[in-house]
Length: 212
Image (cartoon, rainbow, N blue to C red; front, side, top):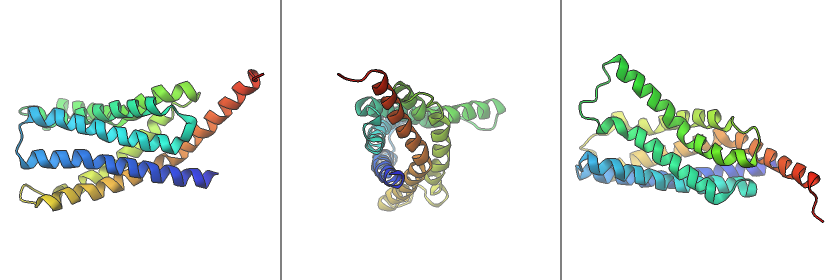
């Protein structure tokens, strides 16, 4: 069962996040080519990020099976992804933003931490209702996202405004797939513990309140 669950989880989460990431990648690339102003880019990317979150949440809920309520999980994941994108895009919308000062670096550091915990924290608000002691979901997922996001910054030194659109899109789609696979793999065992805990809680409740 363990191997079956992990295979299902990794495949479903990788597919959901990889497909979902194409949406903000395509939207961001299109807006960059169109030289859209920041007041257009910012909300558009937040909306695209929410769409990514919907697909990620759907993939994770498929991986979890019946252990988590699908609609609540997908909604929480979409909201967390929208929050993450709003934090990630914020520096590019601030006029005169400069990393040269210590105070700015501190704010960026705090923002980065909030970005990493945004999705798993909102997911945990759903998870804690079904699985006691599931708070570890937050740090495990934050660490997985910290590792996975590194793939998305890898193309930056090799692309610029002269990069052809197909190459530009591909340079983010492939890292997006690698990010998705990294997050899915690193969260697999935590997800398995969630399922086992949910099953144990359900069995305990059944024993205390058996049906007639």
